[in-house]
Length: 257
Image 1 (tube, one colour):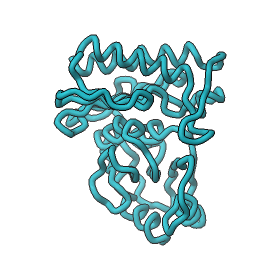
Image 2 (cartoon, helix red, strand yellow):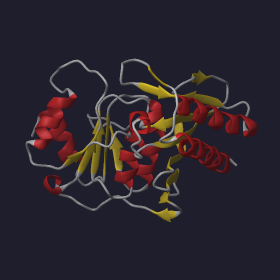
Image 3 (tube, rainbow, N blue to C red):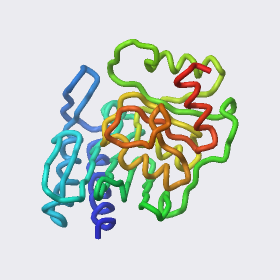
Image 4 (cartoon, rainbow, N blue to C red):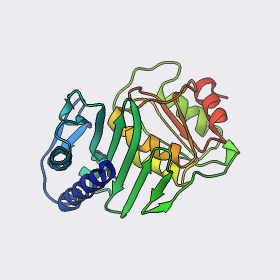
């Protein structure tokens, strides 16, 4: 029933994204001028919450735009109605809906859907990960030097010994290809299906990674913070890889070598 509701909510949200994409809609800023929210984000979020509430009126919901809708339930839905809103607002079809389901503090289900590429990534704890119902697995590449990586940047940050530009500088000076797509959820899913070998980012929120990190793990990958500790979507740092390059990329992020 949880999985059925997850898929129903994901599909409903995808239709909203398609309806508004490349159309006319309201856009406003949140924490910074480029931290955007659109009319489509709000409509997508509303439709997802309606689907969940119809099936599970007592479940806890954490969503990007409305925040926490607390209940005493041990099940929490973690929602990003559009991950990659800047892309969406500019007509770039690298964006998606991301929904994770957490039970007793453990992520048990995750779905990420990009309706513009017709790609639905899905994972269930202990049962593997799929892309459009076909099993997916991380890459087998073991040499960081020949890996293809992806990252993202926060809208603002304080300079320090390990700020995003310094870490990027360390990596690109090694000649390692790095891409920047603008959607952490898609970045994670593309690691899960082997398009990328690794992903790191400094300042994420729970809704950015809740579904995607489970998808990576269920596809055979490894997800941690920059120190190698087990990942939680409630922490800011994330390092997700195929597992084979994890230690090497972790060292490069932390030590520049």
